[in-house]
Length: 313
Image (cartoon, rainbow, N blue to C red):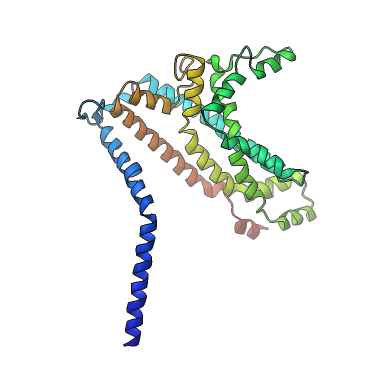
């Protein structure tokens, strides 16, 4: 009888704990359904309709997806986004790792330097983009004035179709501190005994970097790659503000900075083609999902963990 009462009491305690847990996470669950799941389901439905916000949506089936194949702006926006990703993502990963290695050394005021390099990553937004617009100004910008001192005529940067995208790539390195700080945490978790053993075996600095640092940091590189890949394909604010600040055409000049999300925004909120914009959004979702799965599938070939490396040594 006593055991039965204890079982009932334990079961009652578990139910109360479960009820309390669900109560605490209920705001997140409600927010997920209201602001994520339901809007996603609605956008999926609208992607099969002709919807201009004012009138009721009209079912058109796969027409919006078919129209994408013959839309030159869609292909241009996809080209710009892919080109940016191929330049900005590797640069961000490599530069972040380079800074992390430098700031992992025993140097004076290292904490101050870490703070200074990390600070720009939390100063993002319109103000920072406008600052870079002034820096890239062909006439009064700091960069071209510095190049002029050494006899080099600087390019038009954001005003030049051939340099506008590269300008945004350079601008993207401003926020590399967030990637750097994650690398730094990973570097400080690398066991020092592995370096000591490599030194005893006669490995120089380069071999220690290639055979210990890179393999041990591969899980961190993998994480930064996934997060950077998703963020790169959602690039919007910087290109929108920069292009609208130097000309009348958003995504200019000559559509050289017409990113995918800018075209999606124009389709939905400038041309009021919400059905077409929803189709663009779902195509972007599929692209990001496919690339993410590809990176995950390739990870066993280049991502290594401490237990595996110790087993090989």
